[in-house]
Image (cartoon, rainbow, N blue to C red; front, side):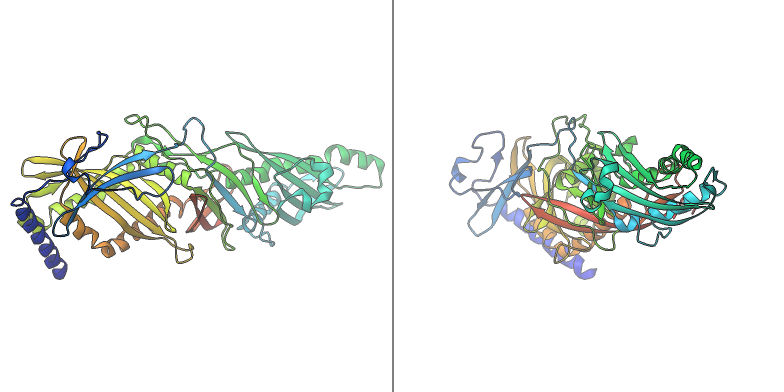
Length: 511
């Protein structure tokens, strides 16, 4: 700690010395009028380097004007803006999906941690006292299996199911009564409107009696009646709760981050998984109604990890819509204030002893935006801070970038680093000048110290959003409890997708 304090003192002393030297030198200062067509001083026009190192595509962009002076030192200013196309709150697109693994549906043993196992327990409890003429008294469920299915793998179902172009859930149940075993095949074909998920239920039960009267009664009140009744009471409710979009996340001021159905069909892979697309609900900012999250379009996706129970795919458009909502509702600003960056600077003993400047809490002028950048994801942010030197306040424009790396091969827990940090000051609302460059260089040079804190913060955010969260619907005896979230990223076509492998299990609602 003492070594760090001495280092900071040396940096601040050099900064103070530079300021004193600069006041004795004469030359043309860099000043950029962002409202003018060519807002740089004529004397510097030929020496100015104009850069835009922002990632390609829509998003948060930044122009940077720099000039190198005699002696080799460089000064720069920058200005940020959002560039479209933008997402439309009135036409929410499918930007994410929930993926349910076959192992959650049925692991082959109908264990209580699966939907098949829970369904078996519920059916046996409900039918415990059941007696149906002429098949007799209920005894047990001897067999049960659930499978993500497609008709090309089960041609025998085509005649009864009809059309199921996106696949279906195939359930096989054998119900034992004391006079006969009732084998039931149930197909649940998903259909989604813009507001809710539903299933078209097709059942086929096979009952055969030698007595024609008994067979007639069976056809009227037997297998198909029983199959439809059980399906509507049990299976469809559990499937809808697991395939539903993520539950709302509470935000400050009574707001919520909400995910909604978006009208695209389910995506079913035989014996592997079933997925349902969803949208992030976007609301316009009252203060900045024309500010919206950028739109990049569909992103590539990866398959579920073998040990995953559930998956969550979030395209960049979904991630940027989430960041927009967190910015719009003020959560990000409150988190920045809670971090206490201003207090840590102002209350530092060396700052209080050697400098007269003080800083306010940092606030975001625009919503942060994620974009692909050199194999990573970079989150760029444009913020404001008030810097006071004595009685003269100055508005500082802070440009920051966080680089997210997901392991050496894109798999595993995220690593977060400070990728960019620059500061420009407002002489007026449109005229920007360099300021406190040496202090910013000193902070930027301590990026290794930020790595651990940033990575820990991101990991905690994932845990807050997904870990120990429960997914279920009221009236059901079990709910899915998420125990771990493992992030992966895939990119291509100018965009990217964050995939979360969620590991958890079904637990009794009474636990």
